Length: 216
Image 1 (spheres, rainbow, N blue to C red):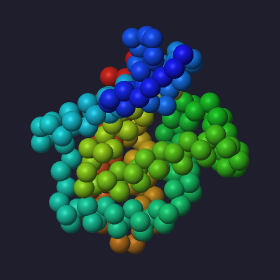
Image 2: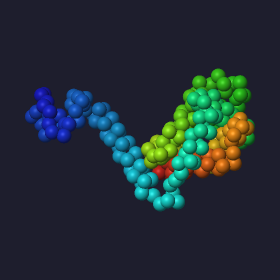
Image 3: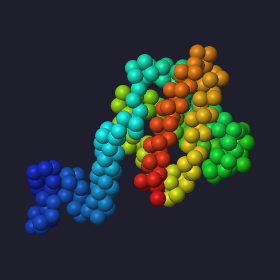
């Protein structure tokens, strides 16, 4: 079976009416076409979430001034110091201490002491990943629509078909994080705290939207 390039980035299989995206092997097209379709579907969903957020009402978007964005970036960099793993772990431990019921959601943390959790590669991987998402939000304060699809996809993974995390648990991590910032940053002001409450509220809304739409 011979193939030749067709317009639009497709491969035309000679002697048939079939065309395949460039790079796919027609001899193994079932698995590869399924993968291609999955990637295409993901891109469409992300584009849909991005456009929908851009076109949402002002009350549904988080609009920040230049000064507010600066305050968020400065306070995050001063507290995080590029060590998302350590800050993430500290915040999760604080959440578990303040809200013990949240620890029961994590099979790899349930019933564990702080010392035991420190040696849990699964927990450290999870907290680092969560804080990388927060860092991504900070990096995209000028274009929050860039992170909305990623946050909603993450929310979808926490629905009843995934990690099955109750939606009312999400704010607790933000509260724990703000508590640590307030304790450890000498220049952390009430204005900073209100901004972080708004920003984390935005993150929670996107996660919960993801659960409602993709987590069933």
